[in-house]
Image (tube, rainbow, N blue to C red):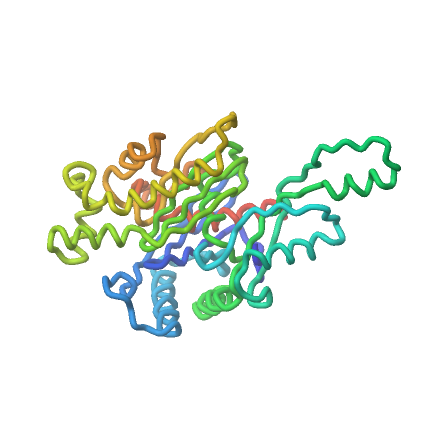
Length: 371
């Protein structure tokens, strides 16, 4: 999305900067396919506290940088550059419809349209856009001069444009962090594009992705490979942990362990998870109603559950019951070859946590293959 610099090499690193952890996946491309080279993650302790941190932005950045360096050193990565992501809640991604645009004036029209959606000056953001479809409105053009007919046809032509924006300040912060640990930034994108790339790829069906992080949940409706609706909710796995702490009167670490290892939450203890799941499923249903017309043939093909916040026993069944559509835990490594026995611990919830980082590394693979 926002190209900064790059290397040509057959190892590709994806770094997912989450609100409570950093995740890394490294892939290697060979003629026989895409192989898993390495993966790892590190929690950000200050962000896991129940109370809000009083750290300044610079202090938080230094902590992120310190933990990223520690993780990279532990993993012994082969890459010297990285594809990175920032949370979609920091930026903007939306489909807009523009009329009467030509090759010459499309940029100006899109910028004018962007002003309607972006609450700050366009000088403060990196803006990118892609035309995803074109169509011509039907009109009766009888008894009209040919030149006037052409003019009206051009006016009636519409294009669907995917508009993406990210604050320059945040982009520069992430670039500085990566540079300080000895890597170069190959590209940066919003995390919703990374997760769609790893979970859906070239599939042209209709999918709903529920990506629950520690503090933010992204709900993404994807049709024929295009993100048509995306919503960010300020609730995630940490809120469930707080509910467990309060109900069971235990520490944060005990509550986290209980959440990941006990099926009590999908049975008698559902009251501790329901408040969060109900918020997410309510918004998911609204997105489905907005994005899927009753007469459309392409109903939801699948609901995919992913993210570090869904490390909860039985969570996919809970979402299936709430939404009335089968939901499954995602597998971002389904098309990746794993040779190293040490890397074959394909725990479902660990894979869900690595969906964004995997999608970033796959972006590097795709660019390498095209070049």
